[in-house]
Image (cartoon, rainbow, N blue to C red; front, top):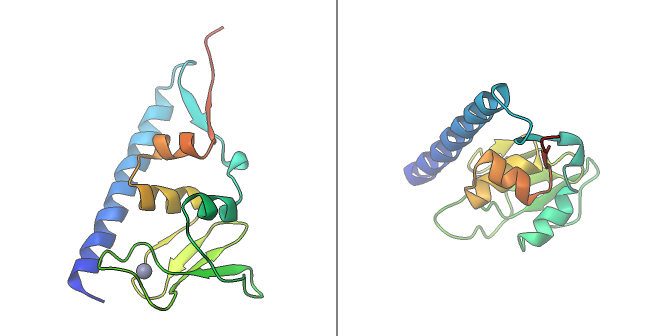
Length: 131
Ligand SMILES: [Zn+2]
């Protein structure tokens, strides 16, 4: 593992933490015109990987897909190091250690979008309108 990778990983985690903190604050003061995250509508992780043009191998017996880790900033991996669960989206790279609990976290890490932007992209941000 290179220092560069560690820094990149820290940046991803720091950015996710900031976004989540912001999100919590946002929910606390949400007005009816603002939205909320609906976890139950998270898309199938495989569909999201297809949208991102990420190729995976077949899932193993525990349901994990293997893919080339997109969080390695210094180029493409030759051997896939990242395992991502085909239904829960939980992922972990055994080379760089990047991990997350669902496909939304994965999508945020890849696109560098905020929690709300990423949730909108994946169709899990519900906006309620004033009555
Ligand atoms: Zn990795």
